[in-house]
Image 1 (cartoon, helix red, strand yellow):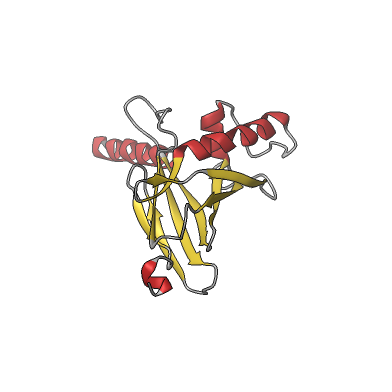
Image 2 (cartoon, rainbow, N blue to C red):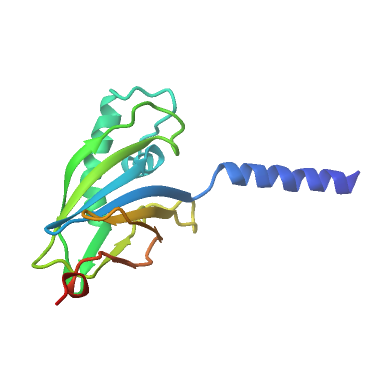
Length: 186
């Protein structure tokens, strides 16, 4: 009986732990163009909740002013914590559009989409290094950091080929653009 009780306690702990976790995986689409890089980043309502300090639930209205303000303020946060560079040059980005979710659901399954644009400095290069440190300021709990990652889909504007990458927290990834000297025949 004691063994059964201990097994139940361990299983209950695993179930509780599985429900609450410091992992967030979002999606990012990247299109490399001759004059710019276009990036669409999905940001979960859970991430907005962490950065704004507000609690958002499934029944929340999309017209809630606190939610609207959190989404607008997140523009600057996103630009500060997502870095694109070509060699020694860090590219400056801007948010060109913010698309709210079509409906509210679970905070980890409800996404705002931020469309960003990064202009090339000179000719496009063969690779761009992406890195991020999202949610570094807020621990999930004492001693446990958030683990935010992105499944990244990339394509060149004049090609149908799509590649996929995983962008992890504090692990820069060099994404191939298809441009650069080899692509231009120089």
